[in-house]
Amino acid sequence: MALTFSSRRRSGRRSRRRSRRRSRRLAADAGLLAFAAAFALPLAWVVLSSLDPDADLRVKAPDGLTLDNFDTILTPEITFTPLLNSLILCGSATLLTVVCAALAAYPLSRFRSRLNRPFLLTILFATSLPITAIMVPVYALFVQVDLIDTMQGTILFFAASQLPFAIWLMKNFMDGVPKELEEAAWTDGASSLQSLIRIVLPLMGPGVSVVTVFSFVMMWGNFFVPFMLLLSPDQMPASVSINEFFGNRGMVAYGQLAAFSIVYSTPVILLYVLIARRLGGGFALGGAVKG
Image (cartoon, rainbow, N blue to C red; front, side, top):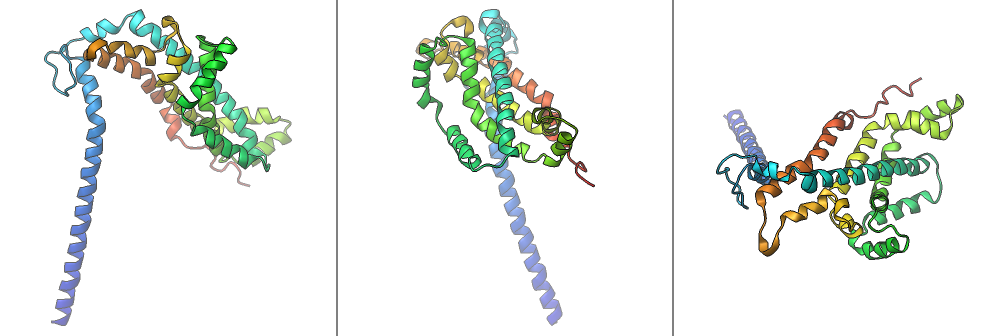
């Protein structure tokens, strides 16, 4: 009898624990579904409204499927020229950011100095500066050096604004590459720059991909910087020209805005798809320093 009673108590405790775990799991699943719905609803509105001739702010099935919204926006003035400007600005600035970040992160990762930590803390502080706080002096400086309303000036500022965080990321990824591999290359007569280009950067491909995607996405969605530094309408990127869909007195072309948003997000999605394999591949360092 005693053994039977004890086994029943243990069985009851196990069932109560299973019940509590099940309740916690259901609560967690419900919370995740709520978060997923919060992200999915805006995306659903963009897709549905782009095909709706009478789109508004509601998420609803289209009154009738149509491609008129895409036909209206797919013109050089509305879409193609702003997208080309965005690709030139963000692509050039991303390339400049990645190159400068790699060159700056290499000595921070490979050489020890008492100035490394203060420099890294300064970089970390620079990432927290709000862009609106520095735009007034930057605008005055660009006027003085005749860089206002120029693509090259905007590219330089884009790169400079993303460089602190890019250096921080690049340095952390570069720390994962064994220094012994470079020492072997130095023994064969390679210079530091050659070892960086031929050994370190290929091995930290996922890290370079992360910095590239992060920098490009942050520049691609930036409205304030090109709005302040570029004045000519023919130089405006898509992040600024999207403001044209918001008319006077609260009138908004929701269908055209949704269609433009889909076209506008396509380059970022394509960039991620192209380098997604590199992002998930990890560092190819297995067995590299054995023996």
